[in-house]
Length: 116
Length: 116
Picture 1 (cartoon, one colour):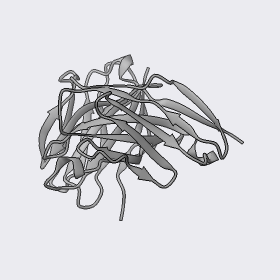
Picture 2 (cartoon, one colour):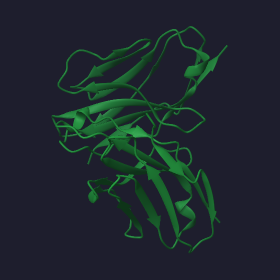
Picture 3 (tube, rainbow over the protein chains, first blue to last red):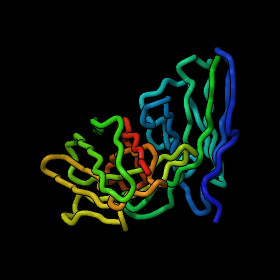
């Protein structure tokens, strides 16, 4: 069984540019969540996608947007990059189920974004 | 809003000894789940142990156990017989018991060093 994968592993952009990060969910998982982890801090929830619809959003501006595709893979897009967007971006997928608490989130290895 | 606090930025333990990592949280919900995640230098977030709030019995997973004090909103992790491979950043996380997956709220993390 293939786990959660993310691409690219590392990325360097300049301020004002746009970036797209990709995530392939684990087989059978229909929910994908994105987190931003600044250096030395805990991950912060960006948003979640469930069956191709946004299903909850954290305290991030609209220039952070996402997509989920029919195969449940997902993209995170960030426009007008700022220096503070430099962070590790983590994707997590979880399987369908009746009880949300039973839906453990499985994390990918992350994409390290550096904004210069 | 839910918050998670880890008051120990760094901890160290001798190999084969026992160490306890602290976590407190704040919530007005009655149905929730608590987690400890491990993040080694590889950056992959790995679930260590999970506790359902409705269960009075403390969760255990091999050398890992928790002390869940619901009234005090405390959730500590005990690692017994510490091994060099336990060295990592440990995050305490909270999640509401929703039915369709839910966001994780993380603490700031505790960096654990295991000395040989």
